[in-house]
Length: 169
Image (cartoon, rainbow, N blue to C red; front, side, top):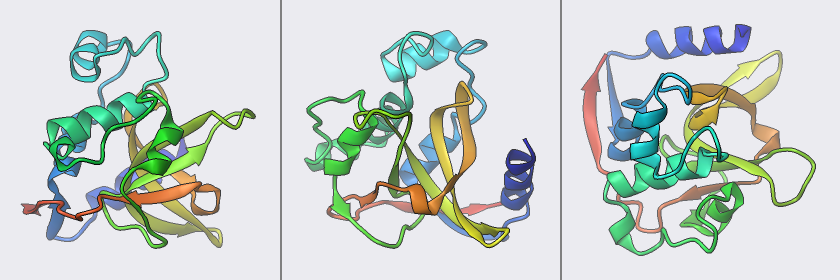
């Protein structure tokens, strides 16, 4: 909980003008939606029942589709509800930028994973963390810190045609 509070304070204290990729605006517009209180809204956006399906990958797919990035040819997955299917999407990069997709392990099985959108990096007690905006994080669309060293991969759209908009805070 302490990390979540620190994350919110960090975000709210940001710069006066920032450049935000269009698909991040779509994802940010869903912040706070919870699989219990907003089940119907999430179901309509995700096309899956968030109470019955691990929905982090469905959230990333829905954001990409809603942002019209799916027409750019590299969003087809052999298993669209698998977080690790995003390891085959776009181009692999070493240093993340806002809007990149980051994949993490989850559980003990090699097929399990978690996926979300990179916002920024922060240092806490000498450890680098990625702020990840994603679905199915504490049963909701939220921003959570994940250890950067645990990342399985960072992916960026091949054409890097994220449309950015200036946004005032």
